Image 1 (cartoon, rainbow, N blue to C red):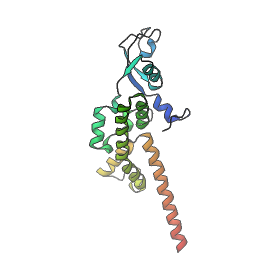
Image 2: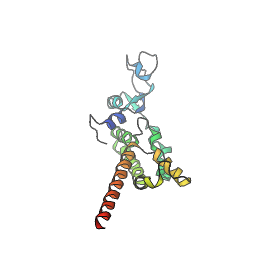
Image 3: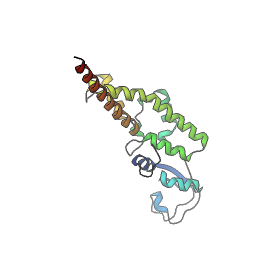
Image 4: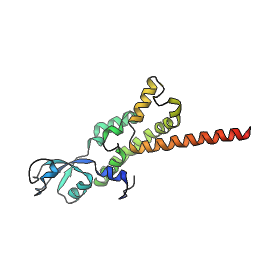
Length: 191
């Protein structure tokens, strides 16, 4: 995902909210905290969209905690079995977990960003083979997954795909269809 001004994925990822704790009083901005207070008081916690959090954090007006989709619980689940985690359920706005992670990395120190990068990379690598495999065999499984426990887990996996993974799934599926048409066309030409 690129950080393009016109990229819908970037816009959706930047709209994700992170929990910020304000370090200073901010007058006339109480509406950001979602309450009825006119001002934001020091030590107030509020979910702020990333696009606004950049300003708050780099101006040293607030701190933030790493969001739950990248917390210890999710990291441990991804280490145990990356394919078992439904990434689309971890974040809203179309399930752009990787995009959200990249936005979080931009805010963190280099050491923390490297840790998030490692989580994103390992998750992607651990899930990629399954994404491509299911895309290529989707027609054989059928829309309902073909029945049986392995088909149920395949359907569950597809439902948990991140937006980036869904794009790869569609590309791999289209590629497999074109390859099959090409192969069938060559077989007919040889006869």
